[in-house]
Image (cartoon, rainbow, N blue to C red; front, top):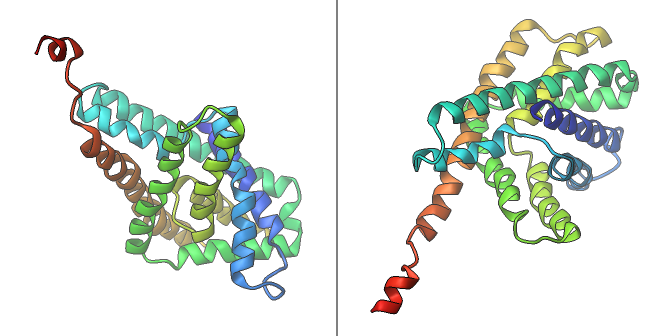
Length: 242
């Protein structure tokens, strides 16, 4: 299921890059970002309705772990396995992007390269805080999916939340891994990316984003709800006796 989620995110990324290719000078940046965000919501739609495991949403297990409802070793193993699966799924889709001929389209390639370098140029501390904000939204979409049993309402609520995440470009460790995978393939299309740049992407982007995602969706967001609702309701039997 971790691999499946990575595949779904890669598919949504292909659609978003394709939908906004060649529009750099034709549309205001805000409109282009809005189109990108609407298309990218396909990722979470497929994960919620078709099944999939994301590191960012599974990070919410931290709270029940601290309450000793889940063993720490099980939580860590789950997060590790899911994260590896997410990376594998995104790297597979990065390879399929090239094999399917998308990178032969000059405008698609140019768009993908621009995204890679924009992420590469962002300092680590911005990626860290962006990762925190990102997982308030991604993990929050899991919370909001339980607000209704209607599939239509669930679809609308989830996608409104995820659209803001995609529109703002908040840093998501799994989504970034698709672009990371593409970076290794650009060399075959006369756009060299050095091994040093790929390593830089890992330690400057992925590591701080990973920590920020866990902090935002695994600690800060669940803790907010925990402290808001932690007071137990009185026992109805004791209440009647009094």
